[in-house]
Length: 353
Length: 263
Image (cartoon, rainbow over all chains, first blue to last red; front, side, top):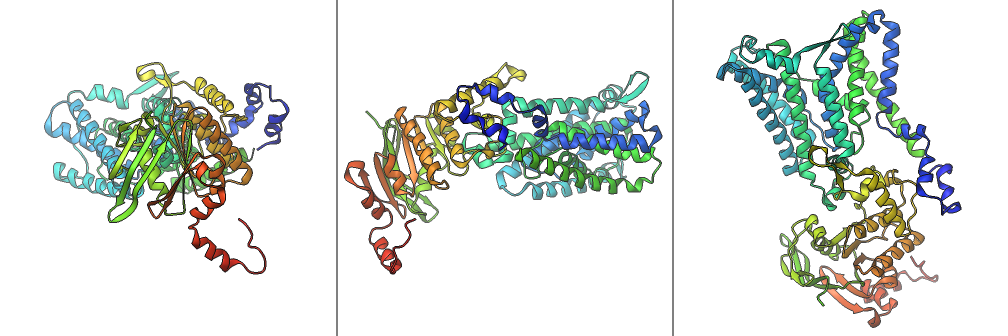
């Protein structure tokens, strides 16, 4: 405890509690935010590439950076919520691909309208999320194991089923089908703002971040998410529906995987069945850089979105700096370590006062 | 008048293991019933039944005269039975006010715009704690930064605020120092004075004797004794609790020139 806060209790008992509350400086309040480390990191990365890469500050480059960030951020945000709830999902990367594959293949084989495929894909993706959540809450096994199983099964299914249905490793083009233009508008359109071309996924990213923050900080469900991650026994003892909360979090991840998958499909028209492996770790890394504790109970959606921004800036910044993109992963690894150390240091400072 | 909670000859088995057998207990409004027993005596099984975490498989369990079988902690809460656990009463990383309302959060607005009534939650938390005589600097600090005694008190204040008629306290003083224990016992007595029926589980006869009106002694899952406060004094209670003759034997074994330190 700080000297500034402790000393007051006995001296001025008649003082209103609000008075003492106001004494907490804005700087300290800021220090207690979980996303602070990520924001500082993002500023550092931005400044770094602004100096190193000449074209980095051009509007079109920034739009590209935001696009790259948004494709990661759409997933990183719900993954962060899940991690605050104390669980992992290793199947997210391939789940995105599964979602795109189901949508594409169902539309191609069964109907003439892509929207039917989009709907079926939503149901299938949510079912995968439900499977993860129910398996976890019913068996009590670690989510690491359960979603590792889902990850491997989905990887196999993606390749096997696509080969069985299409005879190749990718799906057939669906761009001439009914509903394709309108679906593309929703999931993969471009918006022109001040003469610069922005991808619509940026809006999805910001929307998900806003909704997730609202849920986390201002709803009962948010309180329960923090509680099941920070102490599930205590949460259960005071009547929090622990199983339902965790299943809901897996459904949220699945919903984002569906959005991400539909973007993949309608942006590129065909889907490669082997894609997505490894992305799950990028989402987790973005959430961790954003201040999520691996043990649960702490973190923020804004932080995860900023974590995704760091990834986007790095991956594109390296290109604009005309470096060999082979170095990208090395940079990310170093950044993850730095960010985690920074977060740990800030948290310790904040707690020590 | 029917008791708030009454257990008659209650038993519980886990597979072929007898955890509890023929235990009876009565909780009246404004009284403290103390359950004493050594480790493994069945104290936790007893609270788990009252708290709704487990169901009894023999005997009767009545709440306000009505036979009951609680299926969840929430069902127990709805019947006015609140349990405060020794180590899992709160979520350490969450602010005090979020912990205070956890599981019973008030919302304002409707439909998709239903949101936590944050201002009211903060204010109510501060007021409810003040009424118990707990003056917190900041309800926004993580509850993990409070001392063990303060955390227990917050949990007790929370249970009372949410209209508990029966308060079940699991070893509230177990991990606390002398001074902190005293503070917690003071709040337990304050709860009793507000007309709440209290079940205090402990293995410390000194703490039990300070506040309790009635004592239930458990040993290896069965009732080893049942006393009104007028029927027994502290020394006898301590002796009974430690297993009577076993303790005397032990003190002979330990006695060597100097008196063994009394802890």
